Amino acid sequence: MRRTAMGVVASLLACLGTLGVASVAKAECPHFVIPPATDAARSAREVVVGRVIENVGAQLYDFRLQIDHVLRGPASVGDIRRFDSLYPGWPLLEASDGTKIAPCSPIPGWEGNVIALSLGALAPDGITRYNAASWISGDLPVNHDLPRTTLPEMVRLAGMPPADMALARAPVESLGPSLVGALLVCAFAILAVAALHGIRGAR
Image 1 (cartoon, rainbow, N blue to C red):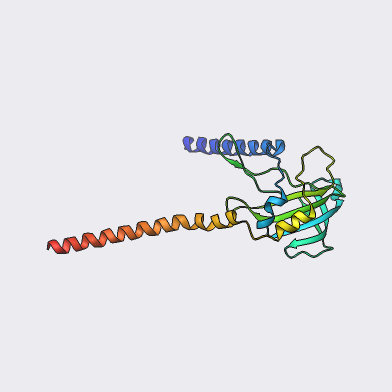
Image 2: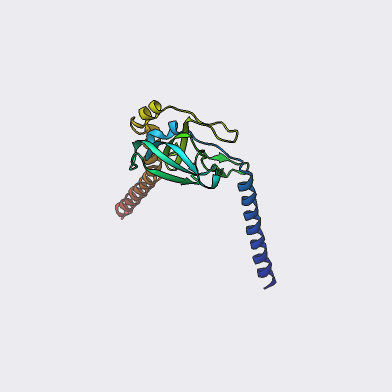
């Protein structure tokens, strides 16, 4: 009974320690990156260009975007979309312990910025969907390097066929293990049939 109680306490302490480490990592945000909308445009589900017309509560990561150009997706010109904590989700950073860390800071926007957004893009792993942004004009009130682009460049990229490497690799990765498994099953079946025929021949 005592050993069981000690085990429960140890498990609780381990859980609390994990939560504490996660909180510290989130507070420090060791992985702050904005993936460019130009790289994501070909595989994105939505590609829009708009102007930030308001920062809700003067917050950098909570803003309203008036859409001026719809290059892909269901949005309409003139729509006003609110983006509150729009996280990129890519690229992943490998920590010292081998775990993968997604960008821990949302995509920012400041009043007057003209931003191109590629939303729901397919990452190079062929599985992960992520968001990306590039600035056509404007800066942030904080010092940070921003991906830059132009409207003609975004129009050109959004009009191209989907990214071949990202889309073509997903089915290969997903079907690969199944194909290997099927081949193994077939091989065992063939061996079993051969063995059965061998036994019958011996009789």
